[in-house]
Image 1 (cartoon, rainbow, N blue to C red):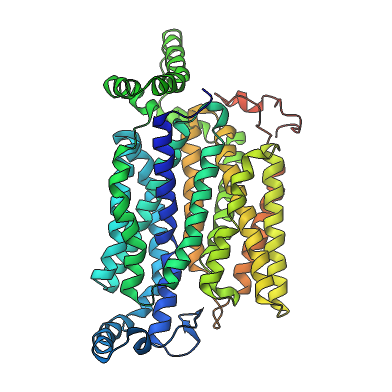
Image 2 (image 1 turned 120 degrees about the vertical axis):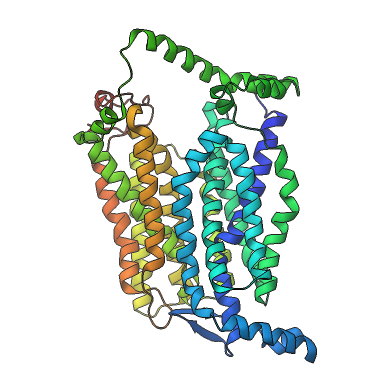
Length: 487
């Protein structure tokens, strides 16, 4: 199959659109702080609970024009400005939502299918953008931010799974990279919409309405062929095959490996004793090899999340205009599309990106201590952010390849849980009174990846090796030329 079938194109361009809109609400807290600070205070630089937000917009009366508009808007603004202290908890509520989405997203998609969970999440995600514009209440705003985080996580889980499962095995590195590229494009467009939205209501409407308009387009996203096979939904598969000759060839190719795996599993079940119970599987988690790999991967997940989201959510603290900073933040992630072209093993690539990320963050910290140019300080921070993003991309595959089949899903879930805990901790780190990132926070952002680089030496190389089915397989020598002895 040299070209994508219509069904594959239907999947990819719709998922790309979803990922393009996703960062509009993902980074909304950065812009709400900027808008409220500009409208509720007078001056070029305002401090909002330890975070400095730079702005050069005109005063509210000038923006709104005539006297009656200004009077009505000022009443709404007075109500909004009375609870600005709640905004500092918006990021935390969002990260709590991401954590909850991690706990429930995979289970829901396995039970009900990836397509319905994705469609519901996208619809709720779009509505969550509109609600604060209509009902600007503090507790409702925090609840909506938490629900938005749940939806964002479910969207990521279902979208990545659908994209990978509708892709031929030989090119499965590309869908995550391409969706990440679309997310970066949305990160660059989001600041433009926020800059054009001088008020709270306009901001939420501008970021939500494009998603609401595009909701009907997502109804045509097909379900995962692998999930349909497991659920014995052959009628849906036959419907997909009947659409065109190219779609029939695509579905048959994608399902060839699934059918083969099921046949082997059925044959093995006849000759093997009954499958071990959950207690036996949990005992394997206490095996020294599994524990070592699980501990290292959990640390790498938490450290990479802490660094990545710590920089993302504090991008306005580097002394650069928050809208320009967010634009360049998205631009710094666009090279992620080239990551599949890198021909390094999992371990060398992880060590390289971790070391570069930690070093760049450390240089950013040192330059900020010596009062260097803010743009230079932010540039090094964004280099560190891109490198840690590359690490996250590599670790997603590395984690799958490190653990034996019997406990793989449990181990990967624990690593993802540690990743989300790192996201949550990043919102709890204190800021300096002037709004800059604190010394302790930047030390964590820089030291965490460097320590992780050293811990990677304890992991084996997995590129080119089959997935381990048992603990004994974990000690199997790797075929990759860069691999050395396993621990």
